Amino acid sequence: MRDTVFIRDLEVRAIIGIEPWEREKLQTILIDVDMACDASIPAATDTIDGAVNYRSVAKAVERLAEEGRFQLVETLAERIAALVRAEFGVPWARVRVRKPGAVRFSREVGVEVERGARPGSTA
Image (cartoon, rainbow, N blue to C red):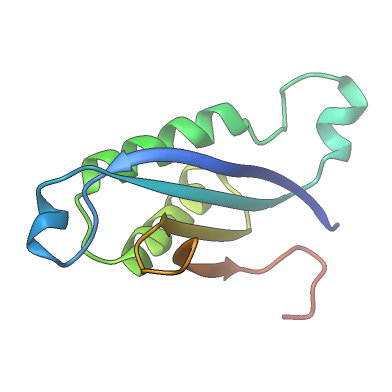
């Protein structure tokens, strides 16, 4: 099964970074989350039962980012992937964490991690 539930451009204000000023000032962070699922199960009944509840995922990700006070985007991405896999039972997650305007002359910088395996994949 190659179905995916996703969240794009989840905007969070958080403390993140290694510079002293970054440890004092909230910054905008953009987060994307892709999660493997079997969409045929909830689609068959047209109910939330068996679905990945993207609203609950978004709230949990926001809470983690806002309360975490991370230094590295890598750490935040890793923790988000672990959170969605553990709390929402998804076998595979891809997480992208972006910091707009963090590097001069770039739109954004960030990191993307993939954790777990998609059902039916050979990985």
